[in-house]
Length: 320
Image (tube, rainbow, N blue to C red):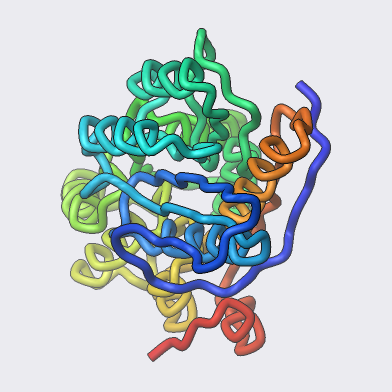
């Protein structure tokens, strides 16, 4: 697999719901950009990047999702609808790498190129032109090493996983476990699927604190679950004793970083994932460009001191 494109600048974020289209169209090009849900600010930011690319290109963009993350049948129905519309390309963030393969194959049969972003479909008969996203495993290995360093190489760690079966969840878990398993002083006392959800993260963390009151760190595979862990840790009066980290750099997590409640997150530059996916699809459709197998978007660990006014302004975020 060749890896060539590496990207790293952040752009603004804007909340969206439902579908989104642009006003003026170039060459009558239309695309669908299908994400997991519109409830997570992670996908708001991705959509803003996608919209910026569509505006620059002057193309029509339909930015759509299922009702909630985990509604696989709902996402399948959305893909079916967008295929029927006859778009020139589809960008897909699949909820499940296996379940969406038949729909990608349907798009293939209809002559609609498919690009995956953020989450992959499993290898198999479906043809995907490229994958746009960060190296999730390496990224979370870096976060795990940060946690190990903060603990001085010794401590008890609990993990909040995303949806099991999602490539993003599995890669993030594999990345952190590679590091934790390589450090004899680290004991993983629990690893619970909280499905990217804050309330589930809260409940799982409360259970962890009840069963393992000696836990030193809780690693959330995304910010929403990590914020649930923050609630549980605060409720137990252990905010100063337990490290909590997340991933995605959503606005509420940035506020928690500034408040000293969340210890770290990962900025995966999700807006650039959306932007570059649309740009890559456009190049493929209009120029016949053969795309790299993987367009890599860079990530970085953020702590409280990184949440500067300049950073927030660059993303268009105002923290209350």
